[in-house]
Amino acid sequence: MVDNSADEVTVVSDSDSGTAHDAQKLKRQQSAIPFPYIPLPDVVELVRVVEKRGHVCRVEEAAADLGQQMTSGAFRSRLSAGRMFGAVEIARRDVRLTDLGLAICNPQTEPGSLAEAFLNVPLYKKIYDQFAGTKLPPDEGIEQVIRRLGVPAKQVAKARQVLFRSAETAGYFGAGRDRLIRPAASSLGAESSGASVPREPQRPRAEAVPMANHPLIAGLVAKLPAEGERFTPKQRQRWLDAAKVNLELIYAADDEEDEQLVAEPTPNGLATAQRQPS
Image (cartoon, rainbow, N blue to C red; front, side, top):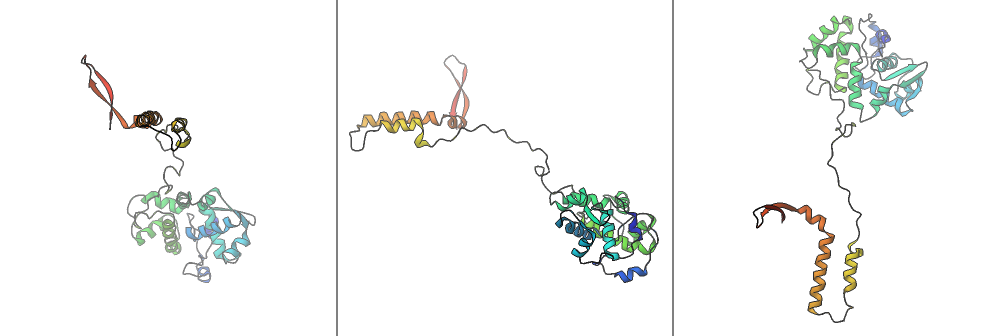
Protein backbone atom coordinates (compact mmCIF):
# COMPACT_ATOMS: atom_id res chain seq x y z
CA MET A 1 0.00 0.00 0.00
CA VAL A 2 1.33 3.43 -0.96
CA ASP A 3 0.81 6.27 1.47
CA ASN A 4 0.88 9.58 -0.36
CA SER A 5 0.34 11.45 2.89
CA ALA A 6 4.03 10.93 3.60
CA ASP A 7 4.74 13.72 1.12
CA GLU A 8 3.23 16.19 3.55
CA VAL A 9 5.45 15.15 6.47
CA THR A 10 8.36 17.45 7.12
CA VAL A 11 10.01 16.04 10.23
CA VAL A 12 12.63 13.34 10.41
CA SER A 13 13.22 10.38 12.74
CA ASP A 14 14.49 11.08 16.24
CA SER A 15 17.44 8.86 15.40
CA ASP A 16 18.57 11.17 12.60
CA SER A 17 20.84 14.16 13.08
CA GLY A 18 18.18 16.74 12.20
CA THR A 19 15.58 17.80 14.78
CA ALA A 20 11.86 18.28 14.31
CA HIS A 21 12.38 22.03 14.74
CA ASP A 22 14.93 22.12 11.91
CA ALA A 23 12.70 20.04 9.68
CA GLN A 24 9.74 22.32 10.20
CA LYS A 25 11.82 25.13 8.72
CA LEU A 26 12.12 23.15 5.48
CA LYS A 27 8.50 23.05 4.44
CA ARG A 28 8.86 20.87 1.42
CA GLN A 29 7.10 20.86 -1.87
CA GLN A 30 4.87 18.04 -3.03
CA SER A 31 6.97 15.14 -4.35
CA ALA A 32 5.96 13.60 -7.65
CA ILE A 33 6.84 10.13 -6.34
CA PRO A 34 6.14 8.80 -2.82
CA PHE A 35 9.07 8.03 -0.51
CA PRO A 36 9.48 7.84 3.28
CA TYR A 37 11.45 10.18 5.49
CA ILE A 38 11.84 7.36 8.00
CA PRO A 39 14.19 4.45 7.13
CA LEU A 40 13.19 0.80 7.23
CA PRO A 41 14.99 -0.05 10.53
CA ASP A 42 12.82 2.53 12.34
CA VAL A 43 9.74 0.93 10.79
CA VAL A 44 10.90 -2.49 12.00
CA GLU A 45 11.11 -1.01 15.49
CA LEU A 46 7.49 0.11 15.16
CA VAL A 47 6.50 -3.36 13.96
CA ARG A 48 8.13 -4.97 17.00
CA VAL A 49 6.26 -2.63 19.32
CA VAL A 50 2.91 -3.53 17.76
CA GLU A 51 3.80 -7.23 17.79
CA LYS A 52 4.40 -7.16 21.54
CA ARG A 53 0.90 -5.73 22.05
CA GLY A 54 -0.78 -8.57 20.19
CA HIS A 55 -0.35 -7.41 16.57
CA VAL A 56 -2.73 -4.47 17.06
CA CYS A 57 -2.71 -1.56 19.49
CA ARG A 58 -3.85 2.02 19.98
CA VAL A 59 -1.87 4.78 18.34
CA GLU A 60 -1.06 6.37 21.69
CA GLU A 61 0.22 3.03 23.02
CA ALA A 62 2.66 2.63 20.12
CA ALA A 63 3.86 6.21 20.57
CA ALA A 64 4.43 5.70 24.29
CA ASP A 65 6.36 2.47 23.72
CA LEU A 66 8.58 4.29 21.22
CA GLY A 67 9.13 7.17 23.61
CA GLN A 68 7.46 9.67 21.26
CA GLN A 69 4.51 12.02 21.41
CA MET A 70 1.46 10.79 19.56
CA THR A 71 0.98 14.21 17.92
CA SER A 72 4.65 14.72 17.02
CA GLY A 73 5.73 14.91 13.43
CA ALA A 74 8.39 12.26 14.07
CA PHE A 75 5.80 9.71 15.19
CA ARG A 76 3.38 10.56 12.37
CA SER A 77 6.25 10.14 9.91
CA ARG A 78 6.99 6.71 11.32
CA LEU A 79 3.38 5.62 10.95
CA SER A 80 3.33 6.94 7.40
CA ALA A 81 6.55 5.10 6.55
CA GLY A 82 5.17 1.91 8.07
CA ARG A 83 2.19 2.13 5.75
CA MET A 84 4.35 2.90 2.72
CA PHE A 85 6.61 -0.09 3.36
CA GLY A 86 3.43 -2.18 3.70
CA ALA A 87 4.11 -3.30 7.28
CA VAL A 88 1.25 -1.61 9.15
CA GLU A 89 -2.16 -0.19 8.48
CA ILE A 90 -3.94 2.55 10.41
CA ALA A 91 -7.66 2.30 11.12
CA ARG A 92 -9.09 5.18 13.15
CA ARG A 93 -6.90 5.20 16.28
CA ASP A 94 -5.52 1.64 15.90
CA VAL A 95 -2.22 0.44 14.43
CA ARG A 96 -2.43 -3.07 13.00
CA LEU A 97 0.22 -5.30 11.46
CA THR A 98 -0.36 -6.38 7.88
CA ASP A 99 0.48 -9.86 6.63
CA LEU A 100 3.86 -8.48 5.61
CA GLY A 101 4.35 -6.97 9.06
CA LEU A 102 3.58 -10.34 10.64
CA ALA A 103 6.11 -11.99 8.30
CA ILE A 104 8.75 -9.47 9.39
CA CYS A 105 8.21 -10.66 12.98
CA ASN A 106 8.96 -14.25 12.01
CA PRO A 107 12.73 -14.97 11.93
CA GLN A 108 12.20 -17.56 9.18
CA THR A 109 10.42 -15.15 6.83
CA GLU A 110 11.98 -11.86 7.95
CA PRO A 111 14.74 -11.64 5.25
CA GLY A 112 12.38 -12.07 2.31
CA SER A 113 9.74 -9.84 3.92
CA LEU A 114 12.19 -6.96 4.40
CA ALA A 115 13.27 -7.31 0.77
CA GLU A 116 9.62 -7.11 -0.29
CA ALA A 117 8.93 -4.12 1.96
CA PHE A 118 11.81 -2.21 0.37
CA LEU A 119 10.31 -2.57 -3.10
CA ASN A 120 6.89 -1.41 -1.87
CA VAL A 121 8.25 2.15 -1.86
CA PRO A 122 7.67 3.60 -5.36
CA LEU A 123 10.93 5.59 -5.39
CA TYR A 124 13.00 2.57 -4.34
CA LYS A 125 11.30 0.31 -6.91
CA LYS A 126 12.14 2.75 -9.70
CA ILE A 127 15.79 2.97 -8.68
CA TYR A 128 16.08 -0.79 -8.20
CA ASP A 129 14.61 -1.47 -11.65
CA GLN A 130 17.06 0.99 -13.19
CA PHE A 131 20.23 -0.27 -11.48
CA ALA A 132 19.45 -3.88 -10.50
CA GLY A 133 22.66 -5.89 -10.70
CA THR A 134 24.73 -2.98 -12.03
CA LYS A 135 27.08 -0.61 -10.27
CA LEU A 136 25.41 2.38 -8.66
CA PRO A 137 26.63 5.86 -9.50
CA PRO A 138 28.24 7.91 -6.71
CA ASP A 139 26.08 9.82 -4.24
CA GLU A 140 25.82 12.85 -6.53
CA GLY A 141 24.67 10.64 -9.41
CA ILE A 142 22.04 8.89 -7.26
CA GLU A 143 20.72 12.26 -6.14
CA GLN A 144 20.39 13.37 -9.76
CA VAL A 145 18.38 10.23 -10.50
CA ILE A 146 16.17 10.88 -7.46
CA ARG A 147 15.60 14.44 -8.61
CA ARG A 148 14.67 13.31 -12.14
CA LEU A 149 12.13 10.90 -10.65
CA GLY A 150 10.27 13.83 -9.13
CA VAL A 151 11.72 14.45 -5.67
CA PRO A 152 12.10 18.21 -4.91
CA ALA A 153 15.69 19.45 -4.74
CA LYS A 154 15.56 20.25 -1.00
CA GLN A 155 14.48 16.68 -0.21
CA VAL A 156 16.92 14.81 -2.47
CA ALA A 157 19.77 14.41 0.02
CA LYS A 158 17.44 13.14 2.74
CA ALA A 159 15.74 10.78 0.29
CA ARG A 160 19.11 9.28 -0.67
CA GLN A 161 20.17 8.81 2.96
CA VAL A 162 16.94 7.02 3.88
CA LEU A 163 17.16 4.93 0.70
CA PHE A 164 20.62 3.65 1.59
CA ARG A 165 19.72 2.88 5.22
CA SER A 166 16.61 1.03 4.10
CA ALA A 167 18.49 -0.92 1.40
CA GLU A 168 21.05 -2.04 3.95
CA THR A 169 18.38 -3.26 6.39
CA ALA A 170 16.55 -5.08 3.59
CA GLY A 171 19.74 -6.91 2.55
CA TYR A 172 20.23 -5.28 -0.86
CA PHE A 173 23.88 -4.43 -0.15
CA GLY A 174 24.99 -8.03 0.31
CA ALA A 175 27.43 -7.67 -2.60
CA GLY A 176 28.62 -4.21 -1.51
CA ARG A 177 27.18 -0.73 -1.14
CA ASP A 178 27.86 0.09 -4.77
CA ARG A 179 25.04 -2.07 -6.19
CA LEU A 180 21.49 -3.13 -5.38
CA ILE A 181 20.99 -6.89 -5.49
CA ARG A 182 17.83 -8.44 -4.15
CA PRO A 183 18.65 -11.00 -1.45
CA ALA A 184 17.40 -14.54 -1.44
CA ALA A 185 13.88 -14.92 -0.10
CA SER A 186 15.23 -16.77 2.91
CA SER A 187 18.53 -17.74 4.42
CA LEU A 188 17.13 -21.09 5.48
CA GLY A 189 17.69 -24.37 3.68
CA ALA A 190 15.21 -26.05 1.36
CA GLU A 191 13.90 -28.25 4.16
CA SER A 192 12.99 -25.24 6.34
CA SER A 193 11.38 -23.37 3.46
CA GLY A 194 9.00 -26.25 2.76
CA ALA A 195 10.70 -27.62 -0.37
CA SER A 196 10.73 -31.40 -0.53
CA VAL A 197 14.11 -33.05 -0.13
CA PRO A 198 14.50 -36.54 -1.60
CA ARG A 199 15.47 -39.12 0.97
CA GLU A 200 16.75 -42.65 0.71
CA PRO A 201 13.96 -45.15 1.33
CA GLN A 202 14.33 -46.88 4.67
CA ARG A 203 13.57 -50.53 5.12
CA PRO A 204 11.23 -51.35 7.97
CA ARG A 205 13.19 -52.46 10.99
CA ALA A 206 12.07 -55.43 13.01
CA GLU A 207 11.24 -54.71 16.60
CA ALA A 208 14.34 -55.22 18.68
CA VAL A 209 14.26 -58.23 21.02
CA PRO A 210 16.79 -58.55 23.89
CA MET A 211 19.08 -61.45 22.97
CA ALA A 212 18.75 -62.99 26.44
CA ASN A 213 15.01 -63.38 25.77
CA HIS A 214 15.32 -64.59 22.17
CA PRO A 215 13.65 -68.05 21.83
CA LEU A 216 16.68 -69.63 20.12
CA ILE A 217 19.09 -68.31 22.76
CA ALA A 218 16.74 -69.23 25.57
CA GLY A 219 16.48 -72.76 24.13
CA LEU A 220 20.24 -73.10 24.02
CA VAL A 221 20.62 -71.96 27.61
CA ALA A 222 17.94 -74.42 28.67
CA LYS A 223 20.04 -77.28 27.20
CA LEU A 224 23.00 -76.46 29.44
CA PRO A 225 23.41 -78.83 32.39
CA ALA A 226 23.14 -77.42 35.87
CA GLU A 227 26.27 -76.01 37.45
CA GLY A 228 28.43 -78.82 38.84
CA GLU A 229 26.88 -81.53 36.64
CA ARG A 230 28.90 -83.50 34.06
CA PHE A 231 29.37 -81.80 30.67
CA THR A 232 31.61 -83.90 28.42
CA PRO A 233 33.78 -82.42 25.66
CA LYS A 234 31.55 -84.00 22.99
CA GLN A 235 28.46 -82.53 24.63
CA ARG A 236 30.13 -79.13 24.74
CA GLN A 237 31.07 -79.33 21.05
CA ARG A 238 27.51 -80.30 20.07
CA TRP A 239 26.17 -77.40 22.14
CA LEU A 240 28.64 -74.98 20.51
CA ASP A 241 27.72 -76.26 17.02
CA ALA A 242 24.03 -75.73 17.82
CA ALA A 243 24.80 -72.24 19.14
CA LYS A 244 26.65 -71.40 15.91
CA VAL A 245 23.69 -72.52 13.77
CA ASN A 246 21.23 -70.52 15.89
CA LEU A 247 23.39 -67.39 15.74
CA GLU A 248 23.61 -67.69 11.95
CA LEU A 249 19.82 -67.90 11.81
CA ILE A 250 19.40 -64.86 14.04
CA TYR A 251 21.91 -62.64 12.22
CA ALA A 252 21.47 -64.01 8.70
CA ALA A 253 20.06 -60.72 7.33
CA ASP A 254 23.07 -58.73 8.50
CA ASP A 255 25.44 -61.31 7.00
CA GLU A 256 23.69 -61.10 3.62
CA GLU A 257 24.16 -57.34 3.51
CA ASP A 258 27.91 -57.80 3.99
CA GLU A 259 28.28 -60.41 1.27
CA GLN A 260 28.71 -59.87 -2.46
CA LEU A 261 27.68 -62.17 -5.28
CA VAL A 262 30.57 -63.44 -7.39
CA ALA A 263 30.47 -65.77 -10.37
CA GLU A 264 32.19 -69.13 -9.99
CA PRO A 265 32.52 -71.79 -12.68
CA THR A 266 30.67 -75.08 -12.29
CA PRO A 267 31.76 -78.47 -13.59
CA ASN A 268 29.62 -77.97 -16.74
CA GLY A 269 31.36 -74.66 -17.47
CA LEU A 270 28.43 -72.39 -16.54
CA ALA A 271 28.99 -69.68 -14.01
CA THR A 272 26.72 -69.45 -11.00
CA ALA A 273 26.48 -66.68 -8.48
CA GLN A 274 28.08 -67.52 -5.17
CA ARG A 275 28.26 -65.40 -2.04
CA GLN A 276 31.70 -64.11 -1.22
CA PRO A 277 32.46 -62.60 2.16
CA SER A 278 33.66 -59.00 1.85
